Length: 80
Image (cartoon, rainbow, N blue to C red):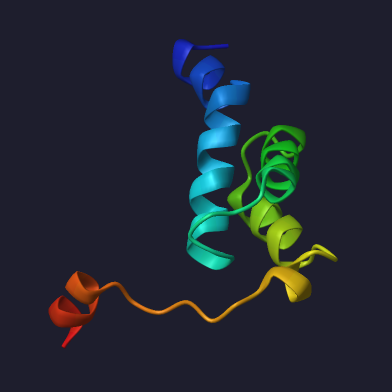
């Protein structure tokens, strides 16, 4: 096991990536439970992002928490 593997599978890394993915796909401020589901999926799958996305989007909490996300003004301007 290399140092990079230990860093990649550290619980803090799982939490960070889970939070980022929840912010991207759910809301700008995801709940603790949403991030926890993503982090547990990350750890359980040894860092498989596809599994994490399935856990986030397939969660029973997803339809209730989903709100359409709008681009921030900077991103809207750049994409135009």
